[in-house]
Length: 87
Image (tube, rainbow, N blue to C red; front, side, top):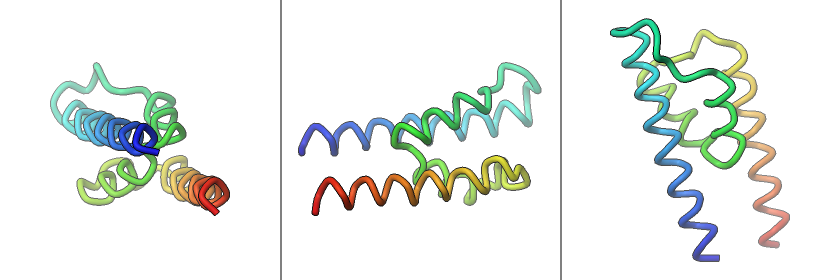
């Protein structure tokens, strides 16, 4: 149980950092950005909630339907999995 919590905290922090870095890179560098597949991968393995909240707060990729549809779906699926595991 403790390892799972630590895992999700670490993945959430990494997702947060990747999202903020990609926002900064989109404004300053125009390259060296994080690939969308990498962002979605980290959302899929547990960072979806922190990534979704961060994207809404810093207004990053909020116009991309790919993210605004897939992230809530991933969050819902993860909540069902968590509910199933802990019931």
